Image (cartoon, rainbow, N blue to C red):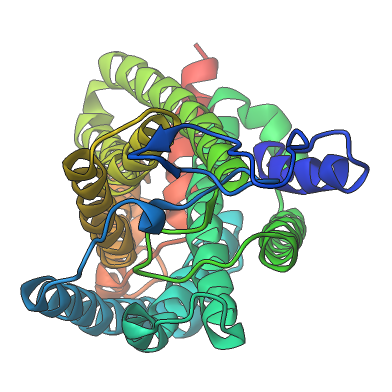
Amino acid sequence: MVSCLLPVFFQWLKGFHLISSPANPVGACAGPRVRGKCLINKNSTTVNFSMNCNFETTNSSRIATVVSMGTILFLGIIFNSLAVWVFCYKMKKWTETRVYMINLIVADYSLLVSFPFILPTFHQEDDGTIFCKIIQSIYLINTHMSICSITVIAVDRYIAIKYPLKAKSWRSPKKAVLICGILWIIVIGSISVSAVTGDNFCFGKSSTRNFESTLFSLLEFFILLIILSFCSIQVIISLIKKKKMAISEEKGVQKALGIVLANLIVFIVCFLPLHVALLLKLVVDSVDASCPVQEGVTAFIRVASRIANSNCCFDAVGYYFVAKEFQEASAAVIPKFLQTKGKPRHKLCQPSLETEIDVLERQSQSLHAY
């Protein structure tokens, strides 16, 4: 959550002129030149490719964009609608996991809703329209919120497993709601400040992207990636130890391992390519790169963006497997007489997403008992 404060802190410093672009005389170029033309606008650190290279979007590229985003929108709406139904109507107990998952669903759903409004902006000539800024802000807010939510879920799992006794006081549904609320305030605040004070930019345009915003977006992501990886690896190590010490629970632990590892892999596959592409763009912006290189990086960003958007679908598929596999995992851990006594047997087949963290925490408590 600390990393989410970086954009706000940066904008605060910039407002007090503690961080600013160096002053340049009128007509001076603040950056490298290509073919006698300035790559960076004077008195700012905003890259402008359009002054040097003309990147025309082909019909095939437009069709590919419409097809990819349309497919993600269609599948995402179906999967996330099913997830909303399960979380809101099939679950009775409010848990930390349920709060964080619903928060992630809201972010994914909001991102999907912005898709139909994003497509027309690819054909706009004016980069600075209010409509485009609003849609872009909605898109960025929910993308960042998805990344933060997935990281918070991993941290919550880590606390439940590594500190099972303290977790009872550290974790609660109310605290989970408070954390989600703080995250929304931070993300919305940082993106809104950037939209108001930043330079004009619209989807599909490679010009006028703010260097500082891109840099801090990269810092935020890689910090969260390190946190997510650390927490997931620690959870996996703890479960492997549990698997060796309790042979009878091997099946349930193995499935729990699969869920944690799958979540980590999906996060890396979906979001890492986009941020690597943005990192390459910063490098290309700082050197006298040729037009083919610039065009290649721009194409990479477009493809990586579609991959990142597909995370909306992968999140929803993950909800399903969490419901199914962790229900079976809990059934493997809970004694059989507790499963049948006083309860209809068919209820064991119903989704029980609230057992995800409970199963992991119960396994961790038994691990610490040795």
